[in-house]
Image: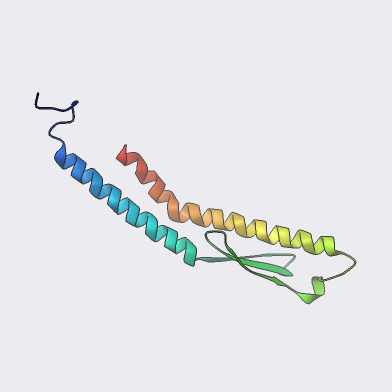
Length: 111
């Protein structure tokens, strides 16, 4: 029997498949590095609260304008921080989709 389970003679195809997988892995690594290097800034309250995070959702900074700090209305400040962080997360998700999306589509060609 010259064929093993119907896969005989496919050495070239397997080699090509391995090359495609290696290239995809390299592209994924580059995309991950791009997301790590990307900084996203979002604000709330017309710039009263500003947050900056990486494309991989690591929070880097929170800036709060002094005029928004009211000891009698801490809840408003908390809401502004939440709004700014959530906006930054949303933007990070969109950036990840932009960077990683084309790579995810390439997975279909491997199977």
